[in-house]
Image (tube, rainbow, N blue to C red; front, top):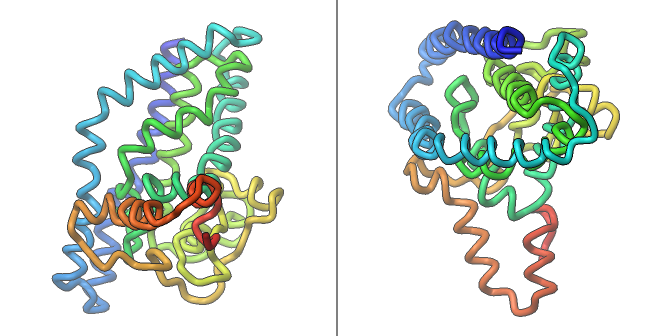
Length: 278
């Protein structure tokens, strides 16, 4: 079992090599376009700033995930072995659950405000954008993967499979790689994920898949890249302040929430999509 789990960890590690090659190419491309000015460097630093609270809470998140998955495994309907077939199944199932994790992160205003909006708030799109994540994700996302544990998959395998899904997505945060033909139809790719980060109306809330695009095709959320993409939020935060990077949408949420006068309005505001007017 240790060997097989190490194989998954190595797979995730390999996914981290490509970004090391892409980032210098992206900076070179920006330099050639004379777009590597002070504001760009400040945005890069803003993208990296959320790493500090993520690292600071790593121990708590790890302990939380171990407790949650271990507790859930006590209620599993089976105890499946770890082999090549359960590894593949776990990755596919983790990707399916990631689709819903990701989609709800966009379509539930509370989740969007306190967590996922952080990742989308950069007007840049490169390898550093992938690192612009909220530490809050570590306490929200694991809940979505409990069904896989309850089916009988080893908790450590589920955690490792989720890690593969996340690690895969690092390299797709790039403008250096264009469209990839048939690959774009089946797998998440730079082209598909550029659409996901776009602010144009035709691109909003599209391409939620982690590794596979099959879920987006099945549930009607796939959109190919057409018009040139503009990145960030519909209402841009216009700040590189690390506090605002992490808290801008949460502050906007609280300011509106305190003006609501009934619990019906408050619940609607919390759990409806960010574009629903209350």
